[in-house]
Image 1 (tube, rainbow, N blue to C red):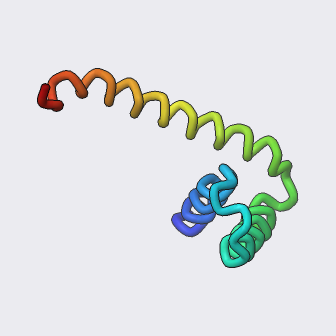
Image 2 (tube, one colour; image 1 turned 90 degrees about the vertical axis):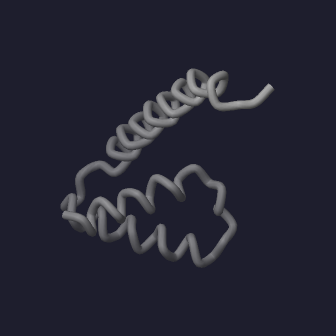
Length: 77
């Protein structure tokens, strides 16, 4: 299960296309996609990708909100 979670994390981090042109990253992503697909036994990866990206956006939004709340108390003027 831990390996599956790590593969999903790799998939999420690379799916935002910041390392799109790096051949090593492409190889890892392709291998991860194949492993995820094998574990899901052919279920729709598109639906999984949408769910994961939505969860990542929620986490990023929460981090941003917390940062905005804490910034006035932690930054020197």
